Image (cartoon, rainbow, N blue to C red):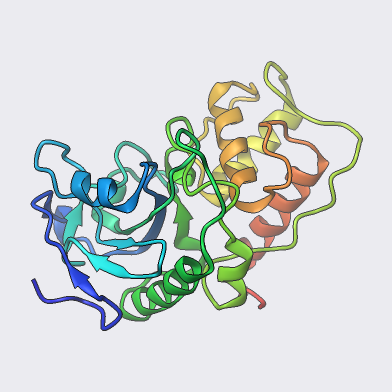
Length: 255
């Protein structure tokens, strides 16, 4: 396999891939953590035919970048999920796995070398494919009910400062009215409409159900990581609203 990026330091082919559906090109850059005890275990699983999982790139803790699947092929990293009403995220994405034990094995901050390498790799990918800043996503964004990665310790603000993804400074956390599980009515419906407009897979029915809570947690992990509790407080709603306004106006994301 010939590497797609000059940043790749090692090629470790995985058999776990197939053709992108309907000739789709990548328009999403999806970031994960490996959620295993170390990089060696993650690499072994991503190459195991029995696991039926893979990714395009793996970023080790020392910043080494390994390619497993050609970008033209559909790697099996996203699983069931959706973004902006479209499923089969694998056919429309490039998957980057970043070595980190995750929430189940001692979640910790990503290393500076990893973040530097991830930034350069992301820059390289978005330069070669039609991936807009608002399509640089967390795995948890596309599968809120199942996934937590790369999690609230991932420094999305650093990526944004380097020209990758979208970000606004989160609104301060304070008191006041909030929406949470079991709430019903027009305020919930308006909040769900904001989530759906931005891209999350929620039903706009005015009922703050488990699906709405999961999307709220995913949003908080990505854009308001200071408190991840699934409660749509003023800070969460304001931060989401400002992101959605920028998106709807088609404005350039200010860095």
